[in-house]
Amino acid sequence: MPPKAKFTKAEIIGAALNIVRTDGYEALTSRALGTYLGSSARPIFTVFKNMEEVQQAMIEAAKQNCGKRYNQKRQHLLPISGGFICKKNGRMID
Image (cartoon, rainbow, N blue to C red):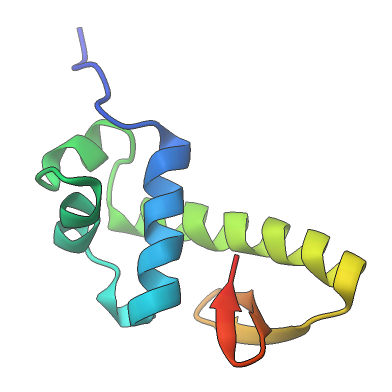
């Protein structure tokens, strides 16, 4: 039986978005995610297979969030590796 997940997929993706928003895409590591969530990196990998999967899920969430906000407020887009995130007043937002 696989171990029970300590964090949900949404919690991990939210943490990843916050790390990228505040520290940049290069700062998104399993160790940084674990620290942000108050844990080791291990619980992340009960939900995701690897960091590439985390990154792809985070980018997809950013695309969806940004698309909603862009349609509502016509914000500018800031490209990142494999996708984009919204930018308003020089600050990144999800």
